[in-house]
Length: 224
Image 1: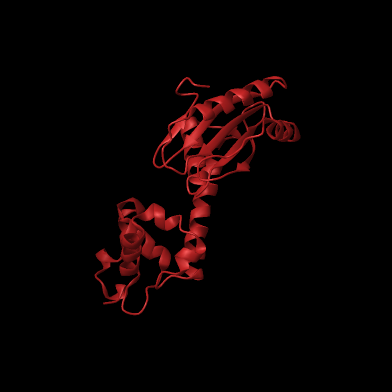
Image 2: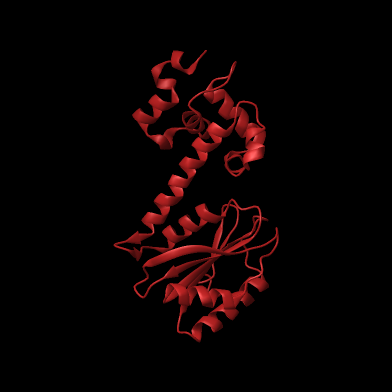
């Protein structure tokens, strides 16, 4: 039976409009994003199959284009629909980082950096550049590495800080292994960067380490 033939209170779109998006399951939200199913499967059936095949929403959303399009019923149109929605979420989080242009809270910073960086299959080291009022200048991915590490070069970070005329910075990097526990190498590179930036009177406000479902703040842990 097509979704259009279902009772009104069972249709994903109508449930969202009546009860709010938070009341829908992952599959129901995906079905709305898909818009259509395939022969013999409704959009909801297709969504449920994708979640089962990928082992959950996160792995599905982080699948690369080739892997995504290899799934029966998916393709470039649905890939574009989903990833456009995901990018809108990231941009929304970026805007909520600030109140009147000023960095709003550590929790919002954590949410934005998690959305931005958690999906990488390799380690990425990034920097949030801030002005003297903690207003965001820009976010940049500075270094890309392997599954287990990314080489960080203090000189390059100093150059970008000077280029942006930043007064302070927040660092972030992901752990593709999923464990957000900081390593000794993470602590060492943070201290080296602090020392290098102190020479030009730029403050390191925090360093976030992003894993699966967990984000560690070195500042909150007293490790900065």
